[in-house]
Structure formats: structure tokens, C-alpha cells
View 1 (cartoon, one colour):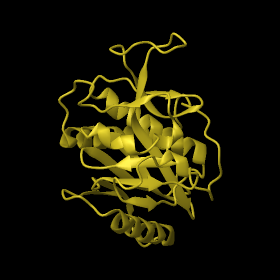
View 2: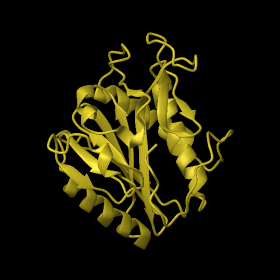
View 3: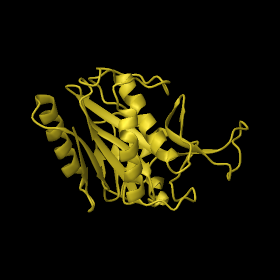
View 4: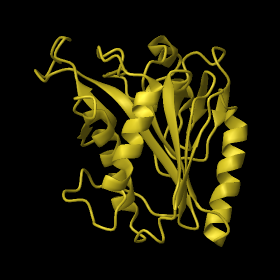
Amino acid sequence: MVEWITSEALVDYDEATSFMEQRAAAIAAGTAEECIWLLEHPPLYTAGTSAKAEDLTDPERFPVYPSKRGGQYTYHGPGQRVVYVMLDVGKRGHDVRRFVQQLEDWVIRALAEFNLTGHIRCGRVGVWVERPDKPVTVSGQMAEDKIAAIGIRLRKWVSFHGISINVEPDLDHFGGIVPCGITEYGVTSLVDMGLPVTMADVDVALKRCFDQVFSSEPPSAPLREPAGSPDLPRRPV
């Protein structure tokens, strides 16, 4: 069984981290159920284990929290659905690559509920959407923006941290960092894409797609080949 928790009020980042670490330990010990926590944070930046000081371009803008997840700087704030994923990856096959692919697939399937196609791009972290309304890139490719991030850590084969999907955040808030170290592309949201989607709508889509992805069957087609090992933090993508 997986327990689903939804927090209506904004959740302090340290409070969320403490809860995740305690819950992950309890799941590993067999004393608690797996858990999916849906929440929003007040405006803040998190610094992953590979964060570069120069990518924090406005350090006084919002609080900055060191994070034990892999990766660089990312933003969380109101209007962004944060999904903290506390699942026993050991019982789900001891396959980190498959698990990250499942998280990616979960995001892409949830976006598809709103007729929006998400993409995974080799060499460019994140879940991306094409922007035909923007000028093509210098290489002649269609412009793309990032709409979702994934960053996890595993401890004793139990995951914590997770996913963030931009529903209707203030996109200007991303301007205080170089999100995930990527400078050539922008950030978007469901509402910015012209979709009148609410947080509740996204929650319904995530719950509907969860069992489609996290079943006993392997993904039909790997989305990409992430690097790393189960005892290291996973970078946000």
C-alpha cells in the first residue's frame, strides 16, 4: 500500500526534509507504508550536491537550503506541485535506472492528461515541452522550455525527494538561479502554456497515472540511461 498525503498549506522545507528522512527510515525498517506527499513550498532555492556558487545569481532573493539530493540549484514555490516520493526501490527490483525512468514516465503521462507532450532530452536534464510559439534555436531546432524537475536520493534503497511540476508558479522567481545549471533554455508551466489547469487537476492526473507506471512490469521503452549508483544522490532532471 502507498499512502497519499496532500498538504493544503505551504510546507517549510526543513520540516519536509525531516519528515522524508524519518519516513524513509521507517519504510526501510518495515514499520511504515510507502508514501507520496503532494505539497507546495514557500519561495526558496535548494542547492544540490553539485551546486555551483556562480549559479546562484541573486542570493538575497529567497532562502537557500542545502539539499542532500544530487544536482545543482532549483526553485520551489507556490504554484508548483512538489511530489515527494518515498518508495522502496529495493522491493521494486533494485534497479535505479528503471526507477528514474519510471519517475520520468510518470511526469510525461501526467502531462499527457492535459494533451501536453513531455520530452526527455539526452544531455539536457529535465522534462521538456516544445514551444512552437517561440523563435527556433540557433541550430534551427524548435525552442523548448523545462516544465518539470526530478531529483531523488536513495537511502537503504528507499527514495526520498522527488518531482516538481510547474503548474502556475511565478516564473520570474527562477531568475535568481541558473536552474540545474542550464542557461540556453527557459522554464515554463502548464498555465504559461495556455492550459487552465489547477493544482487539484494535476493531483488527479498523478494519481490516475501512478499505477500505470509503478507496476510489476518493466517500462516498454527506456526513456534514457541515467548515470549513478543507489548510494548516491540523483541529480534533478
